Image (cartoon, rainbow, N blue to C red):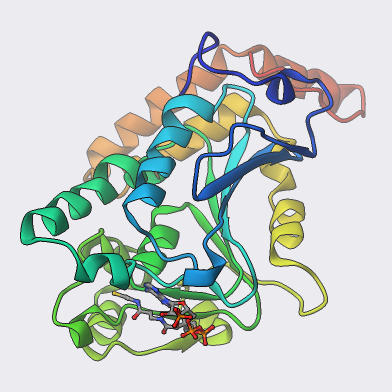
Length: 283
Ligand code: COA
């Protein structure tokens, strides 16, 4: 996460930066802040928000230069209503040498994978089709909210490759081994309702509401909650995916310790006694 001395814009510093367009647009991405969340929008509607080299690098720059300690969540979405992201930019890919493709695959890990280890929760607001690398981008996020017309697939095997931006590893962890085999080997395309049913996404927005507004409202318990507890819970939850139970339980106690000594814990107990909402400071 960018430190206090990193490149902050005036817009970011403003105390009233709840709905501000960040002038430091990162090429194919735009950034803005709303309701405590840093919102990253892929601005390649004409190519259905597919991920070319510049877009992946811009994602890396968001983490390196734009994410600040005040951001309580990171939300990723796509421009337009057709696609969240159509995955790899197949037109660019066609021009790439084998080494270019290898370098591009590594870029998913260096410039995009921070979404899965980000200190604050990451949310995909899926505004349309999430295909291939576009779905893998959503899988990196902690939470997924989709518009009712969104669709989902990992069609890579039908294109002679495999989902290698984490798809074969994240998908089984999210939907289970059996469903992941089906989705990857058959390239099955799912509707938002089906994706919700198998646990691929957490929520489908109402048809009347924009998925971004719906997702922002839904995550208010995160953006209005106790920051240190949110971060500690995230560390413990992510550890559950790589540790055995005994090691995980020990790790969990360590995460609790970070909350135990916080002023926010004391504030929550005082607020309860005084029958008022707590005011958390993140200390
Ligand atoms: N890479 C590069 N360009 C892409 C693209 C991709 N992954 N997906 C779509 N585009 C381009 C199209 O080539 C088209 O460009 P053109 O106007 O120059 O012909 C433009 O985006 C619009 O695409 P279109 O298919 O007409 O849009 P749609 O809204 O009807 O459908 C999708 C959107 C995403 C469902 C459809 O484009 C699609 O299935 N794309 C391929 C997805 C895919 O297989 N991804 C790779 C996974 S490994």
